[in-house]
Image 1 (cartoon, rainbow, N blue to C red):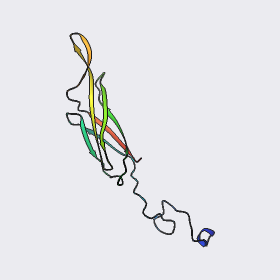
Image 2: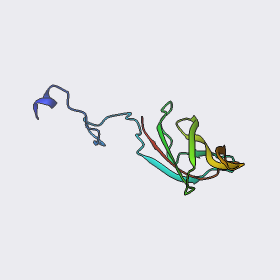
Image 3: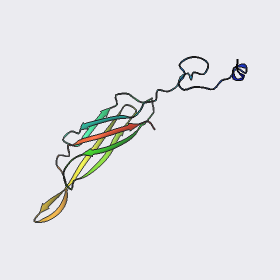
Length: 121
């Protein structure tokens, strides 16, 4: 018996599945989750995570838009996020020629593929 066991204490081991070093009631920690999905014609998308995070856990969300339109500017907004899902809204601004002058206008249909990555906080 080593010194740690003689005193009745031992170091906790996150990887231990049994024995005195096992951490009881440890939280279920989700790894990185990713998706590539298309928004609707209004530019909205709600994604339900394949693996929910613990109650009250709000993950970090990163968004990127996949589009080959030259000169397009995408604005992305997270409109709702919980431990089970995220909702995003995208808008697309493009250059429009009005009477020979180029001005920026909001695209009528900002549908595109988005890449979403969520990670634990």
